[in-house]
Image (tube, rainbow, N blue to C red; front, top):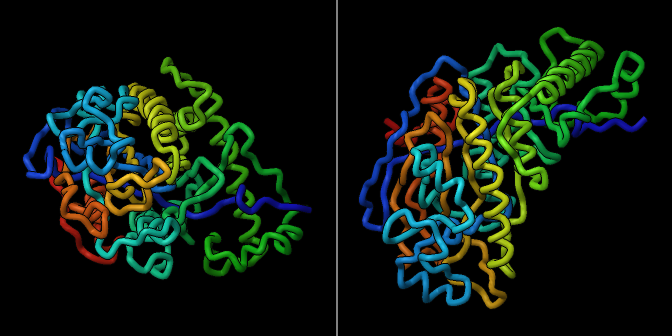
Length: 413
């Protein structure tokens, strides 16, 4: 018998962010309308969207008014007319029309220069730091959302508490106490296990050697543990499929865009009675060493076609309006373009925090394009301040218990 452990339960977690506002390198502040992160009647859901590969922040939020930008990117650089201007210095990539409309309505917080000290330019090592909120990476233990779940939901046994839509569960979701449900297609997500499969599962699953496994309860036998895991999987399957099958929305999600369809499923779970508090997605392709103009343009179109309708959809319900969406990447790209009309691994980059309960606008200080770290932007906000703010404001947990240290909280109100 072949058993799919990945389809079972994996890790737990997520990531998030918010901050102060500024328009350019001089740190001038600009605020927008919309309610701050105030408590609402509905429990807050956190939605994490990971842009894997290292999103080019300078081709996402374009500093068209900077002479250095134009000199360093003679073929890749975008003129003001090709952007959606925020001010006289920078603007959104021209394909982010729906995101910009939500920004203008006060529902998007743009956090500039997010990063961390002594940055790492390796995809895997940098992601480990983002996922654990610790320079030691996986050596620090569980993912930061796993630690958040342990503090905020210590007695919650809901198997759908954390959900990842995709095949590779991010380490941020790693938890021994609150393992995440993971699926690609919720309509096909189901358990076929039962009593007859338990013995084979015990031998084949390897869960006793899996650091991301669910923990046995005190006094629980191996057989009882396996029965409970399988039962949770069956219950979770039914609830997830029911929530997606019954979900109805007037919002048009492009059927040809995979990320958009995944976010539609996320909207169903946010609005469904599944008890899910953290949802995670990943979109790849952002390692644009070559042909960036074409590749990144398409990525921006995909991102806009997904996030725009998703935010529209979230606005239709109390649960949706309470949700918080965080978009992040493991690092940005270098300031200068390379010889293959692409950009290489960099350091700092923008984060987006979106939602109807977000105080939107420009947060943080735009990094200097002249004072660089070996050709890379120097971060102006530690991403862990973003995490700390979300942990406290959205989940009511002291952030040092989750992050292992204290970080400045960002003014959201």
